[in-house]
Length: 233
Ligand SMILES: C[S@@+](CC[C@H](N)C(=O)[O-])C[C@H]1O[C@@H](n2cnc3c(N)ncnc32)[C@H](O)[C@@H]1O
Image (cartoon, rainbow, N blue to C red):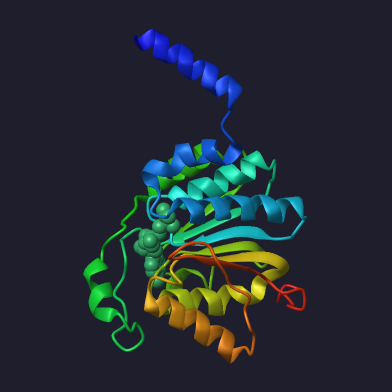
């Protein structure tokens, strides 16, 4: 019976081979804290910036157990790219939300310490999926690390850090380093009110009307407008 099943599966795999994304997803699923659609968009977005020759590195703020970071790594490998990856997290779980800035503070505070990842395990996972290629894992609060260790040019920025202050600080620090045509993906825009407020206030202050595209019940993404001038130039 088992060998018949194995034979059947081998036949299925030959006839209907998995897509690159499906293979990548299978290797990160046990570690990922994001939905399938958001992961699929992240995978495609990474391959798009490579294919389109967008300059700059790949950056993720909010790594946890490395699920989405592993997918980014695998997408770069599948695309044959030598782009550098930067991964930021305190690896201590979610910090305190801000009662004044996170409108859903009462719900949010229940998650303090949640999503704790292990830096060593993340490094192992991501390095295994990336193959050769530089990976910078920067441990600590974004507010303490980003001002001192961050790339000058960013092709793709994935923000998955939930609270107002985390999201706002990342945007304030990294948005101007993004390349025109680059991709910004925001994991919690439709889910955590603090995240949405941070994004909306950031763009309002800059007088930018972002063309956010909804991915699922939580995530959105956008292309950096062609008129945008990266601070690296
Ligand atoms: C939802 S998890 C990330 C999940 C991951 N992207 C995935 O899909 O597998 C959010 C992460 O952001 C980190 N985080 C949030 N705010 C932070 C801050 N201000 N500084 C450092 N890390 C932060 C938390 O520690 C947590 O690991």
